[in-house]
Amino acid sequence: MVTINENYGKLRGNYLFSEIARRVAAYGQAHPEQRIIRLGIGDVTQPLAPAVIDALNRAVAEMGTAEGFRGYGPEQGYEFLREAIVKEDYGKRGCDVSADEIFISDGAKCDVGNIQEIFGQDNLVAVCDPVYPVYVDTSVMAGRTGDFNLRTGSYDKLVYMPCTEENGFVPALPDRTPDLIYLCFPNNPTGAAITKDALQEWVDYANRNGSVILYDAAYEAYIAREEIPHSIYECSGARTCAIEMRSFSKNAGFTGLRLGFTVVPKELVRGGVSLRDLWARRHGTKYNGAPYIVQRAGEAVYSKEGKAQLKEQISVYQENARVIREGLLDAGYTVYGGIDAPYIWLKTPAGTTSWQFFDQLLERVQVVGTPGEGFGAHGEGYFRLTAFGTPENTKEALERIRKL
Ligand code: PLP
Image (cartoon, rainbow, N blue to C red; front, side, top):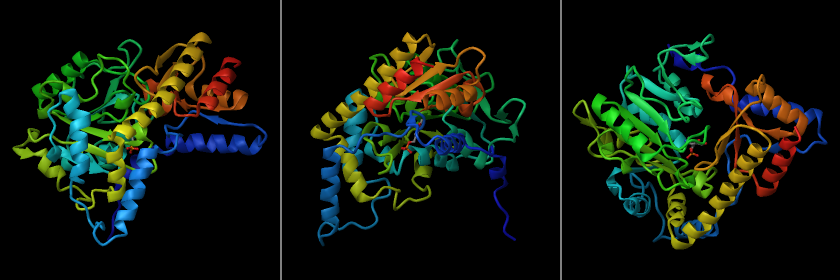
């Protein structure tokens, strides 16, 4: 008899973004005359850069010729892309990463969850709180947590590392040593960044305890300050304790095209087994999830024109972040993030929960954001706005919020 994965039954009923969509749709239906501005979901709005489109067109044309046609691609992704990543993302920052440690994929979201398949069932997982919900949901589905505890607002058997105003939204080393530690910097949702010294402490901690850090660097392109590391491999000893995931979604607008990669260093060994070799056997080997034409588009991100065009795109989002941050500060809000990240994390007014603030913004000024509670118990009392809107919408949203 077929049985189902009962861990799915532990997932919370309403996924954050479905609940937001439901409330926005209900409001929109009741008030069709109102123009709603969405600064909620972390999707980009600018079109793909011309260098990326040219690369796509060239690759499509190639696929229609006898000489240029490609079938199944290499398991880890095409060498042209992995070499470009090694040179541009790692070599230029003095990180020791080689092309055979890079695994191309169809995006970081898949990798951050799927990476768990190479680890044993009984590993203890640690996540930041608040957190990008995918780390938690995939841990639940993989059976590495207990039930959702309504009293604490968290899953049993999962180590939550509070990220608060007091610690600058960078968690303290946990008392109970986890096996797998999800870290994400620059952070979604808080917009916090981590200094190299602070990250080095995590690397040393993981090496001391034999833990593995799963480092999500999806927002590294937004780092503005010199002292903030772009990769965990800028820290010494990271090659024996860290896996890094990256995405082309937020630096190059590939949220719909889909491209990302994971780095698993050869020195990363647990139980005498190379994690790199295990990941090489992951689901979807052979196809690696990213089509040839998309990998060519990814290569173009590192071309001279691509780099210049994307710098321009990112600077538009960075300027949006500045507009939101400074506008809110000026209006008297307490605001975090938005300097090295496209997310602004504001404190909701005293006595207002994050969902109440969501409803106020929607109903009174027709602006959609994301309630902090949706990212975990320590997200309550906060609210996330994203810098991915158009500059016009972002400015207008701020003008409206100031009138609240
Ligand atoms: N990691 C973090 C922290 C994110 O916020 C997101 C998307 O919002 C992703 C990964 C997903 O990236 P991708 O589009 O490459 O799947």
